Each structure stands twice: as C-alpha cells, then as structure tokens.
Amino acid sequence: TLDARHHINVNGEEQDCLPQKRLNMARVAAEIDVDAVNNNGETKELVVVPSDTPIVQRPPLTSQGSMLWRATPEVTISEAQKLLFAAVLGIYWLVLIVLYFATATFDKLVTTQESGVDGNEYTMFNHISIMIFIGFGFLMTFVRRYGYGALGYTFLISLVCVFSAPLYSTWFRSCSNGYACNADVPLNIGTSQFGLFGAAAVMISFGGVLGRVTILQLLVMAILETPLFVLNDWICYDKLEVLDVGGAMVIHSFGAYFGIACCYMLRRGVQEFHDNAASEDHNVFAMVGTLFLWIYWPSFNGALAGNRQEMAIVNTVLSIGSSTIAAFLVSAIVNRGRFDMVHVQNATLAGGVALGASADLIMQPGWSVLIGTLAGSISVVGYKWISPFMQNKLDVVDTCGIHNLHGVPGIIGAIVSMAAVEGGEQVKIQIYATLCTLGFAIVGGLIVGFLINLIPGMDTEDMFKDDIYWLGAKGAWRRARPLVRKNLADGLSGAKLDQAILKLFDEMDPEHGYVTTAELQTWLNGKTARSAAPFTPDEVREMVDEVTTDISGKGLYLQDFNHVCSRIYLARY
Image (cartoon, rainbow, N blue to C red; front, side, top):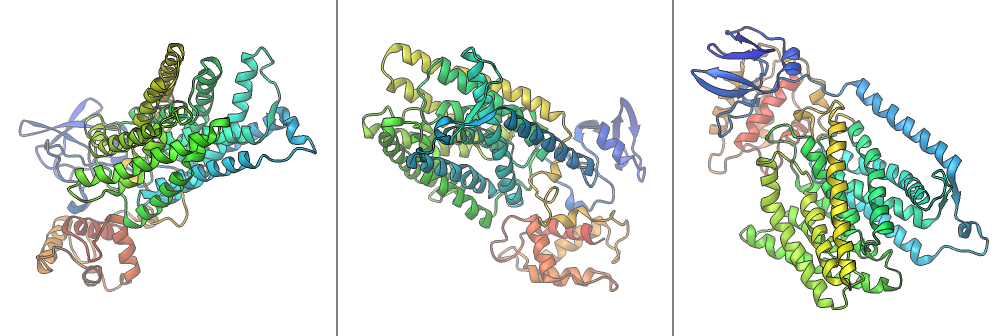
C-alpha cells in the first residue's frame, strides 16, 4: 500500500496506488525487485511493505533518498526446501559409502602387523583437526545469532570434504599416471590429513558467504569446490612441482578467491544487514577460535616439510607472532588508541598464511619477522578500509573478511616464495602455480556461485540467523508471529506507537540517552491489553537481545529502542 500520488510498475503496467488500495503482497514480492516510483517528478527506488507495518520498523531513507522497504513472506525457507537438503546430503552420502566399499583399501603399511603409527604424523594430524573443527568453527561464531550455524556447518561440511577429497586425489593422480581411473584408494593418516587440507580451503570459502546462504547452497558449494581444489592441487604439486609447503597459494588463496567469487555472484544490491554484527559474548567465543588457530598454525605449515620441519615450525612461530604484534599496533593507530576485536581475531593470523609457501625455505629468521609484520599490518588495513569498500561500492559482502586474512596474505606468501627459491626456472613455476590457482579459484567460484544462486536462498531479513534451521535458537518467536492486527489492543496505530515511543524516550534520562530494560518492561505491560499475559523480564530481555548488539550494560539507545518496541508488538499481536 502506498500513499496518494505514488505510482508503481507491476509487470510493465504502471498502476496508481491510491490510499487504502492493497496490492497482492506475495505477487509483489515474487515479481518486483526494485521499482521506479515517481513522487512529484522525483524518481526513487522502492520495495513495498505492508501498510500495517509500524513506522518504527521501516528502515530509514538512504542518503540518496531511496526508500528500501521490503515485502517478503514470513518464512522464506519452506519445509520442502529443508527436506531437499536432507535428500541431497543423504544421496551424496550413500554414493560415498558405495565408493568406499568399491575402491577404498588400507595402505599396505597400515595393515602390516609390525608397523605402528608415526607419532609425529599423528600429532600433526591432530593439530590440523583442531584447527579445522575448533579453530575455524569458533572463529566464525562472532555473528551474534549464528553460533549454531558457524560451529555446526563447519563440523558437517568439513567432514564431507574429509571423506571425498582423498577419493578425488587418488583418481586424479591415477589417471595422470596412466592407471585406471577407478584405481583403489589406499587410506592412511596422510590421506586423512589431505582431506583436512581440502576442508580448510572449503571452510575459508564458507567464511566469505557465512550467514547468507542456506545449508543446501553451502552443501552444494562444498561438493563442487572439493574436486576443483583437488584438481588444482594435483596440477600445482604434481605437474608444476610448486614449492608451497603450507598451502599459501593452493589452500589459502584458492579458498579465499573461490569464496570471493561466490560472494560476487550472490550480490543483492548494496544494503545493510542488521544482523551481520557481533556481540561481546560471541566475540569472546570467536577469540577462542583465533587462539586455537594461532597455537597450531606452525603444525599446519610444518606437517609436510619433511626433514626441514623444525625450520618451518620456527619460521611460522616468528612470522605469526610478528603479525600479532603488528595487528595490535596498527589497530591502535587506525582506531585512535583503541583496539578492534575484528583485527585481533583475524589479522593476528596473517603471518601464518604469508609464510605458508616459504616456511621451509627461509634461512634468515629476520625475514620471517619482517614478513609477519607486513602481513599483519596489511590485513588490518584491509579490514579497516578494503572490506567496507567492497561491500558499499562493489556489493561484495565478505562476512569473515577472507580476502584480508587468506587472500592477500596468500598472495604475499606466493611473492615471498618467488624470492626465496633458487633458480629462475623455479621462480617461473611459482608464478605459474599462483596464476593457475587464481584462475581455478575465480572461474570456479563464479560458476559455482552462479549454480548455487539458482537454488532458492534466504531473504535479507532471514540472513545471519540460526532459527531457520536450528531448534532452540533465539529468534524463533519471530517465525510464529501472527499477522499484525490493524488495531492494537491499546488503540495505537503505527504512527501513534512511534510518537509514544519518542515521548517515552524523552521522559527518560536524556543525559545518558538510554532506557533500561526494566523501564521497557513496565511500559510494555502498561500498553498491553488486560486480557493478555504480561511481559516477563526474560521475554523482554530475549527480545531486546534479538534486536540490539550492545546496550552498554545499561539500556537501549533510541534507535534500538524504537526497533525493539516495534518487534515486540509484532510478536505479541
């Protein structure tokens, strides 16, 4: 419903939207993306909302004067779509089971009675497992209402990669050596470790699209990305014989730019995501992931270093330690003496990525310190300025900043390796491997991004939330709310509710500019019909947490106060 003198274009036909004239909202949501609305000769962008949505819930006008109001169904992911994910996963898993029965065997050394587990190899395997499942999982829990998804999807999708990557690797290498492409797959700790490396690349890509894709889209992305990763790995290591012991190019750069390419294909127009935000508690959990990654990163770079393993480990410690100090230093500089938790969680790890290709090549420790310092500094700059530019100007939303943590430091690592290797021929190989990796990542990411974009996705208001797929997640009350009644029990229309909230706010403490949750509870119960159950403190607190990132331990500021009051009324009535 639009005001008088507004016009809207529906299926090529311009229609007058007179007062109280109602459009079919489902049809509008399905058929209109952004329409030109003529208001007194001024063209504006508009997406329609139901007329009975309170004014305080409608996003404000943008700086260009565009009205970005959206009409969407209450539940954008149907039960059928959720069951489709189960069907796809089930079929893929059955195929893997058949393939393991048909082709998988144990390596001869594994079945020899006299053989035992190589303690060092198994230790490295454990360290990398901790990085993948705990490090990456917890690092991505910073989104305030996406903790279940960050941990759960990391667990599931990583295992899909761990099971499938060794199969692809054996088949590619068998075919290239002239053997039958259905050759047996000999399993040992090394093949399982390779599966973890494949999972690392996919998890890096997952960080780019975190919170903005359905679990079905994520599963399809992982299924398609894994063979591309293995193919690039085979070309770089087996055919080109690149020197990249820690995967700066083959793992980090591949995963980062594959994910960025997918993000590019998932563009929806420059917009703000209210729920793409952290909270203090979630930042603490994410910091746990950072610390696990930091501690075990030397094992990641040194696992395949052979007789130069100790050198690779010590070089990585020097580099990642230097990037940590640089991250704190530069973060304080760019934030006028204060630290940004995003920088501390991510840029501190950039040194481990940047030294990945040359951890076993650098003979002078000073270079490791310098490389780590450079990587950490550039990563902070990326989070401070490049990520906002990508989102606001290019419409590429990189949720975890994988471009700054894995992409750019991975390129730095490739360049460092070119300087560290001996002989001009090996320098050419490093260049070819870098270009090959970027080509597979970008082209593959664009294709896979296009394909997963064909799968029905989430509406903007459902992004970065667990309650679509997870039982017990906060926000489930939002799904069950009935249609908003035109006339609330206390007679407040949208405009009157807006005025009442502003009046209440003015009556509170203007010096500090906040309203406490207790005052909010009292006010809400005073506005609630006598026949309705009163709002409990826990209910108010949960709904406040559903809307605002930070109440500074005191209360709600005006903008969040407006939002939470509107949402609570929508939920109750």
